[in-house]
Length: 327
Ligand code: NCD
Image (cartoon, rainbow, N blue to C red; front, side, top):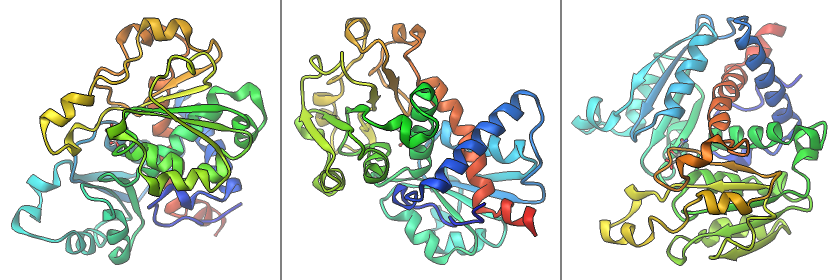
């Protein structure tokens, strides 16, 4: 049993310990089963979580709150920190974190600039969970994405690594600003370097920045960048769609030029790998048509549901639940 190996969660790179991740995932599955039977443990009893969100969120924030409360803990915070907290009075991120870390046992932070979670972790007395830092990373989304791939391909092997082996993965859309893609790519050397192939599908303006591309090429993973996705759709196992991140563009005009670059609709579905899955961190903004939702290969809502249980397991890990149990 691994006791609180992870404290702050800043980057997906921290999840290089496969055994730890496997334990988190089997705990997430156990919690999912127990939730269906209404038999969840009160593992967060007496603990409180504060969420500070400087950018909008639905899934990440509400699944963290749900995870904490269902495990018997408390959750409170601000969903619009730029407007409703002392940030409006000029308080720095560091000061807010120092204060809040006296009030709670874990802080979930979504910041609007890259590096925010790292800055927070430097001054926090309690674990910081990076729920997205601008165009940087989204490591808890990475965990639930990885869990989802393993869960969807259960028949390929007994553990996550076996199941991921040889999969062809296409990352589609806004690879420049999309932080969920950045986190997937940053952990690729651990999870996708076993006969995998990664396709990077984007318009020129939204290509994966070199700093992230080097993470996959240096791991010896076969990478192909392309614009036309039709020829790869029949063979791709995991189609990972993303939203063009409108809020990161300097002008509406620039956004309009690329917003509809990749739309997965019935024609695409008809040629898509019969054994493949379609993922999306959500929210979607037109990239996947509603007609696709009925297809069993559409995994994005199952993916979002998994977030609740993966975050439960992660909360137990960072608050040292296993260690407390053993004490
Ligand atoms: C993503 C995010 O915030 O980065 N959403 C999420 O947390 N599931 C993706 C996005 O906003 O496009």
